[in-house]
Length: 253
Image 1 (cartoon, rainbow, N blue to C red):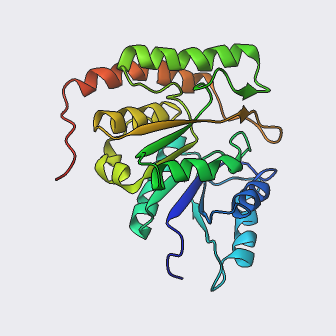
Image 2: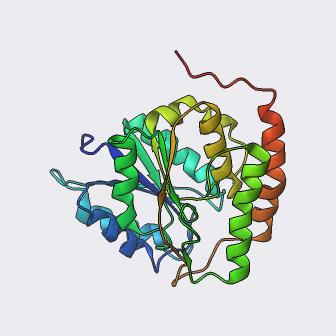
């Protein structure tokens, strides 16, 4: 089947059987046509099997959408999942590549605006931002809200990046950003990956736009957040900044 759409939504999963069918159907119901890539890290709960069933219903000749599935063996990390997805998207020829969570914390209805900011309004990278207009987070404990907000303050202080929500995982990239960044040199595999990608794009001079969203904590399934993820992000930001001082960021001619 040839490439019909110019935009791919990458959704990493691990044990998301409660959410996966709903999130796929929500993306497919949007007015803009988005193809989907599910990257499943060997979910023992059968997430991958649900995706395969949906593929049989959706992936027919003449369909306006395509569901792709990349199955990996074991939990290999969020960052490596997205890197695999980015490489897949570039190999297939997609012009725009979005990333989002499977648990409805990112509202699929915001996808068209992220996409349009890149396709029509000149952004190279659009961030679905929880903090560009106050604090737009629903159902998080206040401690986690404070930690997340001040993580953004910390990242801006250390790196100088002019992004309010540097840890955000709801993003749309133009293919030029992903072609320019050496994906094999992206170091972090947890949520610090999100910071590193935005920081590297900014250092290369790409235009970053933030679009205000409302982030709603999951109601089904279990969070994958851990103390190790925060530790990687906290110490990794300083390491990332130091490494950047010894590197030149030049776009290919």
